[in-house]
Length: 62
Image (cartoon, rainbow, N blue to C red; front, side, top):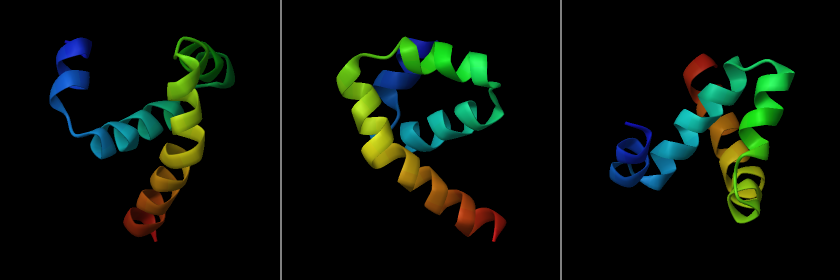
């Protein structure tokens, strides 16, 4: 199911979903999830994904 989601979901949407997962994770879970990502994906998350998710949250929550 995870592979299907990753391969069939637009990348910007994946970043938003990933942000929601990390938001609900505790610090240990967050470290585990981020630690399991390849280095280039972690960089993409920090440079593009985190700011994108923050903008999404501001729009949705006000």
